[in-house]
Amino acid sequence: MILATAATLLATVAPACQTHACEVRTCDASSCRERVARRRSRAEMRRYRRRQMPWCTWGPESGAALPPFSVRRYRARNPASTAGGKFQVLDSTFHGVGGADYPGTHDAAQAPPVVQERLARRVLAVQGLRAWVGCR
Image 1 (cartoon, rainbow, N blue to C red):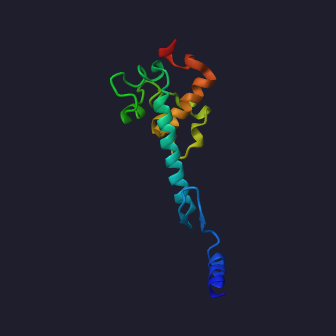
Image 2 (tube, one colour):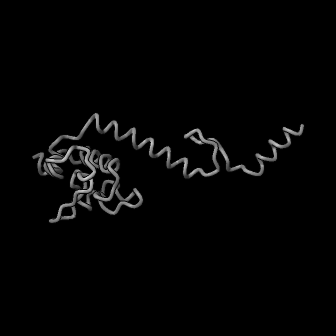
Image 3 (spheres, rainbow, N blue to C red):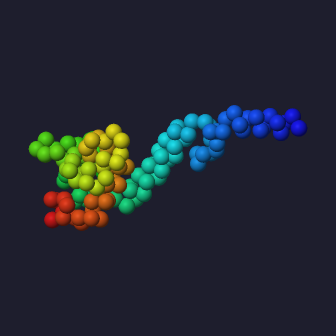
């Protein structure tokens, strides 16, 4: 009886505490969501590494001498235009395919690698290889 009453009391005092997808009992759901999102991003990047975009979309655009998944390649900026990132996507295109939906990303060069890969695949699906000068 006493144990049942204590359990009921705890349930009424802390109703926000629950088990989340990351299998941690916590009252701070935002930290759990961040961990789950990071885990999904890592899994998504592994898929992207297995199935890379065509070389002409990123090789000549962001430095042919750099390794394919180099951090410097993802931070590359074009000094002559607003293009940036691994795939040298223009800011207008970046925002047009959903880049503005990600907090803290004002242009492609500021976006995390997984976002750049995701949006480049979206551009490829919509516009095809003609979106990149090196693929014509």
